[in-house]
Amino acid sequence: MSLNETILKLVDQYNDEAVEIRHHLHKYPELSGKEFETSKYLKEFMTNLGYEIEEVARDERSGGTGFTATLDTGRPGKTIGLRTDIDALPVQETEDNLAQKRLVRSENDGAMHACGHDGHMTTLLYTAKIIKEIEDQLSGKIIFIFEEGEEIGTGIAAMLKHLEGRGIDAIYGNHLASFLDVGKVSANVGPVMAAVAVIDFEIIGKGGHGSRPDLSINPLFAGVDILNSISTAWNNQLNVEETVTLGITQFNAGTANNVFADKAKIAGSLRYFNVEEGTKAYEMLMRIANGVAAVHNCTINEEKVSGPQTVPVLNDEALALQVRSGVEELFPGSFAEDVKWYASETFSHYSKIAPSVFSFVGIKNEELGSGAEHHNDYFDMDDASLKYAIGTMVKFTADYLAN
Image (tube, rainbow, N blue to C red; front, side, top):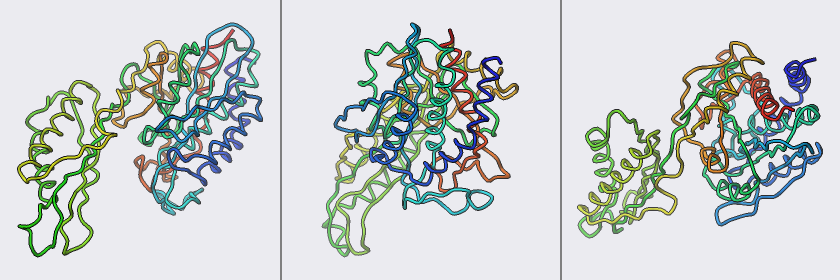
């Protein structure tokens, strides 16, 4: 039996198990930096397979839930990193998806795997299980990377420090994609996900009684003018050939109808592929915020975690072509061309450690009701996608480390 046939056989053999594990992980989501039970569950699974667990040391931002698991084949060769994220989102899950009642639903109130991280974890666990079965055909080392807090970026710095000096030659990750049909996989060369700059600032005014606006400084009006000025500048001051998306998601001020608040909050994000233009856009935004606030006798307090956070996810050419070749061998006709996503990922930082590649695996199935946007309370995935996610990761690993 060829290696490809063995991989497909094992993927099918473990499919029901993998679906069951994915459902378990979906039922018990935990928020970023608080993935204590999730981390414990994942460690037990990997330990039972015989992998060596190493905790990632905490830093000032992480919660201490990240870890790695390593397999050394005992034969000289390359070292590859395979990565998953493990956190969920503060979203209250609906009972239905886009078409029907869900097969599985979160049992943790106010938390939901609304971005597919339950599927990512399952993919890595069953890649690890299958790798154990074909270990004798591989050389070198595999480091399985379980990154905490991806959604808010709290675990990446600690993980990068943990991985330094380990001689990693390549790092692979994947992301389930609601905009791709089940059975489609993509890993194009070059930029595939956008960079992000976080918008998070307070407008500081002066609170007071609602009857005397002249004795207060109302930050709400300053906020309205800031938002209007930003939207005008977006059309007139940025390069129209270099897209920078403006996503304002919060504008909060006050809690009572007869009280002027002393501050208001504006938050959101920018997404872009051109780092220079994205940086320019963020600096322009904050210049406008400070200038308009001053007109209203307000000041701006820019939060510590704001500004540019990541670079675009850039796929190494050789690694991306290897993913494509593997997909075409295992799942002929499944590779999707020219796929870019304006979402952002901490996976972009792994290129500081080694050449990296990030693939997208489709989960959209209109009949089942999956295909809602990520970070949405209607988000759901088709479990049939696990076959493609696991198969692609195992195939890439095997090709990279084959004797």
